[in-house]
Length: 71
Image (tube, rainbow, N blue to C red; front, side, top):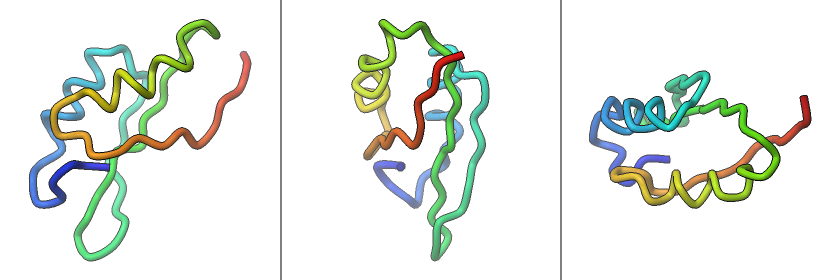
């Protein structure tokens, strides 16, 4: 979720892509508010650290993990 819903998510998207995201999709929630749905594929050892790294990005208000699976 964005820190400020009125700002563009382009900078946040660019920073997430630099972290190695495979996919970043902007999705609507309600009342014009949007969030970024992000897909990462990482080794098991890095999974827990990813949320913390995302929370530290400028413009990120909150991070929620929706699913984790092994490949």
